[in-house]
Image 1 (cartoon, rainbow, N blue to C red):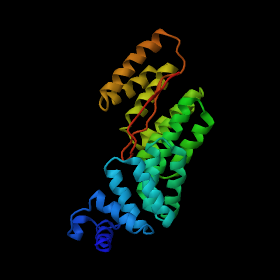
Image 2: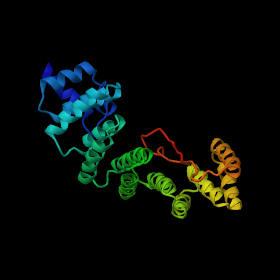
Image 3: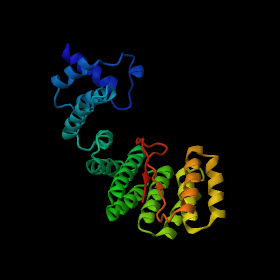
Image 4: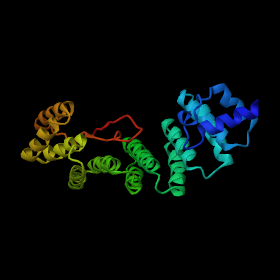
Amino acid sequence: MISHLIILVIAVLSLGASPAEAGKRPPSLSELQQAAVANPQDPQAHYSLALKYESLGKTRKALGEYQKALSLKPDDAKALYRLGRLLGELGESGQAIEIIKKAVKLKPDFAEARSLLAAEYNRQGVALLERGSLDEAREAFQAGIQANGGAAAAAALRNNLGCLYVREDRLEEAGDAFREVLRQNPDAAQAHYNLALIYYSQGDYQAASQEFFALKGLNRDLAGELSDYRFRVETSTEVKPPVKTMITFKGSPLLTQGTVRP
């Protein structure tokens, strides 16, 4: 009975096959657990169990099964990708980056892995930026750009590199970074916001107004914040504008964004 169950599980959840294609119902958690216990040297049995745990939100158990699968088949790019993604969700960006890099090395055309790698570098860079570790943050943003994770990822990374330049009082370079983001993606709301802040801080109100009106058509909440900032910058001596970092972008598994304040 168990041997038949193993065959069913492997057939249904093998890479590239789906339950519908196999004409079978998806195996239950209990069945997958039995299959992994009955055949502990089969990486696919552990991978399939990990997928099930992940779908049920049992992250720690999924992690353990992905690690078992990889101990048996270290060159499984999809298992590496999923393990890296879970580690990133747990806040282990350093480990996640190293694991996802292995997936990309094994399969250079793995677009999802490249996008995830860029996202993890971005998340790591933002955390370092917020802690004031500017040199390390710069390295993370630049490595993320070099990961070639797609246009949206590159825009977020370049925007955040611009935020770093603001922290270093390099406003000309910051402005160039935000303009490059908008050249590639005119709908990047944070870049319009940040560029307007630069113009306001430099006293170029005409250029800032152009960015403000562009922003109103994209994100009225950010436009409202920008309007409030214009009042404050005209009535105070604030030096560094509170630029917006970008963590969320199309295709990214990350779901937060923040403000880097003076």
